[in-house]
Image (cartoon, rainbow, N blue to C red; front, side, top):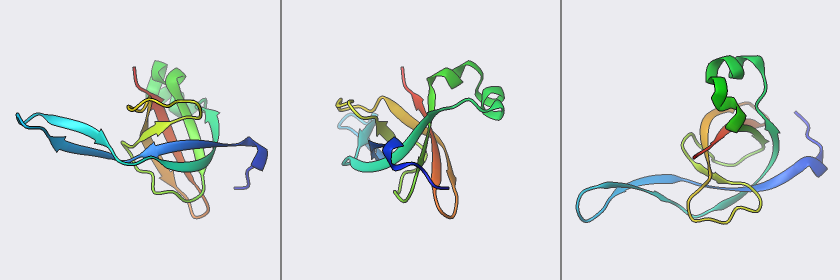
Amino acid sequence: MRRKQSLLKTVQYAKKTITKNAIGETVETWGSKTNLSAHMSPVSDRLSVEMFGERVTAMKSLIFDGGSIERGDGVWLSGETGAEPVWRVVSLEKWPMHSKATIERQV
């Protein structure tokens, strides 16, 4: 799938790691951020609307080449700089020439 270069946006993602703190609680931490060029679009296909329902309004699709992004990873869109990611990868489809990740905004 060929994408128009002017529509590519740079997003950052980081791997989620689960650790235990001093009192035994499990804590989510994030690895180092990695840049990724992706085409971003709202999720609006019929199957996703049926599957996710009202949640689909808080979801976006990222289509990208390469990258080792996985389900559960955190995503920061351009302009977001917080320590905790606002978006999480909820599904991932890998194809021979590109991958598609569906991300959901965490409230």
